[in-house]
Amino acid sequence: MSPDVDLTVPKPGRHALRDRLLALDSRLFEIAAERNWPFAEPVLPRLSRSANHGVLWFATAAAVAATRTPRARRAAARGLASLALASLTINTLGKRSVRRPRPLLDPVPAVRLLKRQPITTSFPSGHAASAAAFAAGVALESPAWGAVVAPVAFSVAMSRVYTGVHFPSDVLAGAALGVGAAFAVRRLVPTLAQTGPPPRPRAEAPALPGGEGLVVVANRASGTADRMRVLRHELPEAELVECEPGEVKEELAKAALRARALGVCGGDGTVNAAARIALRHGLPLAVLPGGTLNHFAHDLSVEDGRGLGQAVREGEAVRVDVGRFTSGDRQGVFLNTLSLGVYPELVREREHWAHRIGSWPAEVLAAVRVLRTDRHPMKVELRGETHPLWLLFVGNCHYRRMGLAPGRRTDLADGQLDVRVVHGGRHPALQLLSAALAGPLTRSPAHAEARVSRLRLTGIAAGTPLAYDGEVIDVAGEMTVDKLPEALTVYRPLP
Image (cartoon, rainbow, N blue to C red):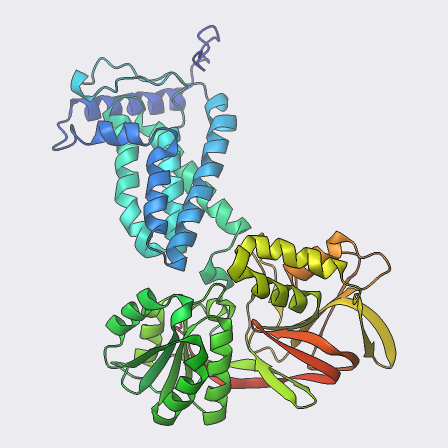
């Protein structure tokens, strides 16, 4: 490996301001070298070496993600994405643009020196850029974790001056570049705080300081134990009921008779059951995500027991729309989505095989079986005309794409049904199957969309599967889908 500094390149001519700044930078470096840094000798050189090639930050990200909270996992991922962008910028532009030699090591005590001296150019500091990028990325998603990581990142940056491998200006420039990389990543992939729904319309809900009057029913099959422990700490007077999946609806019905507010911990299907009962009894709903996807809770910006506990203690709540469908004697509500066509059949096939062969193999097998069936495309009547469809998707409120992030709803009370259609054809291509799997934001030549307040379908064949909030039933004949605007009051921490 050869150094990046080309000693044959002539030095630039004299420039008064630049020369004064460089002299000041060199003087600050000498002051740092002469200064006694208490307790730094056994720590900073080791910390500096541990940050080589991002090893320290990958280990930190793994430790943060191991806490198993959604925000911590997102913070870790955002930190690594910011680090990757900063490193790419440093290695492709930064080091090659300003070919500054490393400081002379004469003033630095030998005990501080690294065993292996870097041979790349000095400006800017790649270690400082990576440290600042990772810490800023984590902090943008989770300020609490950012506060934990920031002292480590600051120490890594300072270690580069302490060990004599960078001038102070190298570190400052690298840190600025790292922070800029974190904000660039946030622009591409907005944080949850940016994409959360507006805190409107506010609703009247009882403030329960210790949680007294709140009855929370948790679905054990959703892996809710850790989250229930946090909620028990936040709301010690709340009544918490854990039960098996088959007992959830019965326990929710019992809880509604004695509760001032109904709580639920589970996936979207469990939350749907709780919403129906809360609507029937006129109770506010407290949702603690506990399943795999948790779309409704995340669109409310409720991630864990801490946020939910704050909202319940202070009576912070909003009103949200509820979707409703009726088909013959079948009727129900949905908080997230309703769909006909390929997707419900994929869900049904996947669930049939998942417990035997695992989730991912079941996904593949379900796709193959659905593609080979001769029932597609299904046919429905719209405005008196028969249309072949691969997928009809109806969302409760408008789903959006924010930057490169997955589709989210930024308003849960807009009064609209978000209708997306993938048209059928003689040659069902894989792109149509991809559209069915990807959901509402797919763009393909066979894709169309509209936003309405009411939808009526006729001519649905008997046995056609309908999926809503993760549940699958059969429908036939005629179906009506409409909205219950601002019908449900839910607790949500407000800014």
